[in-house]
Length: 158
Ligand SMILES: [Zn+2]
Picture 1 (cartoon, protein in one colour):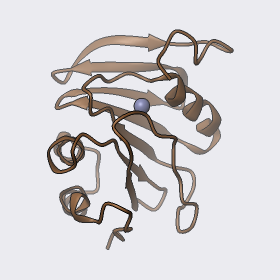
Picture 2 (cartoon, helix red, strand yellow):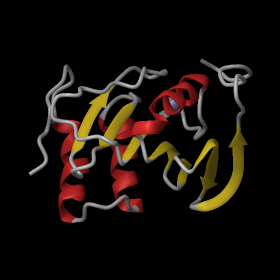
Picture 3 (cartoon, protein in one colour):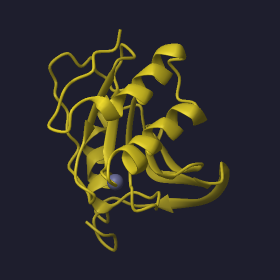
């Protein structure tokens, strides 16, 4: 069983995410849709973060409508992280300066990351190409966001 960790908002928004994962522990369109739903319909446009650890356990938390720092409770989390998923409930999938700093710092201990901006609208980062985010819209390739050494954090909202 995936442990549903409590937080200040209570665990209710996590139920759909967790039950979808327990039926099929893979990152599917349905799984991402559940996370998006939690972030926009269940919670009032709050950012939701789901970390899938190396034991396929979920670590779910939520934050403010804006950007929250990558939050990891190392207790019970098996590294490396398989995937860090978080939402942009305002509806745009790209990496903020904060997000780029997070993957840059966590690159040795993180295999992949996904930012969600809607159903079928998401960006995918992978460790083997750590300076780019592939962005999809309506489940189809839209564009690549690139950044370079020393440039992250500039020209993007914090
Ligand atoms: Zn973000």
